[in-house]
Image (cartoon, rainbow, N blue to C red):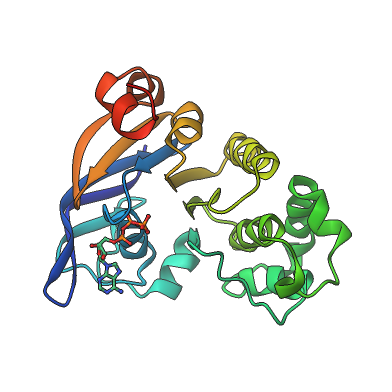
Length: 237
Ligand code: ATP
């Protein structure tokens, strides 16, 4: 079943067109990745899906319904949750408080404990640091907290914007392993990454974004083997 469908989506910042007629689909159960250089429009696409940024053209459908003009908080209620680029945790709040904020839109608050347990199982480090103030944690830990917070909304579609950005190598491996595990547990994932090697090895399908347009698509494996992708994004030629 198609969970998310963007058709001919365009997004502007004033007169700058950041995304131009972009069409992608995400099937339920998939990990799909968007790769592309700096400024290609990856974050803008994610913002359009989560509703932070309005679209100037095209349509967005989620679970069969048109959500193009739906408010961002109502998209969270429908099951779209984003872990934003640059983490965006609440630095003055503890780990527990940050996670609780992620559940603000939930109506089934009674079942929250199970989701705290799930997050702490995926990220034992957060369990150890549950009373620590977010802003005093390392970059890798804050990244885990941002993903954990997004999971507390119990999303059907998890949007991850550059989860490996700025992380030490041992954290990078760990974050990608956890993304695969989150997907295995039943959450559909749309992943934006500059670490194309890791993203393509983890993704079922991928799209390449260049200056606001999709220039290539295929399975993760196909794109890993594609010579122009190797040259442009994988540092081998
Ligand atoms: P990065 O990996 O550097 O975040 P990206 O692929 O996510 O890159 P976007 O951040 O979506 O790219 O940016 C796409 C285009 O839109 C770029 O030309 C960028 O300069 C422009 N842009 C992004 N945010 C804004 C903004 N708030 N105001 C004006 N222009 C913006």
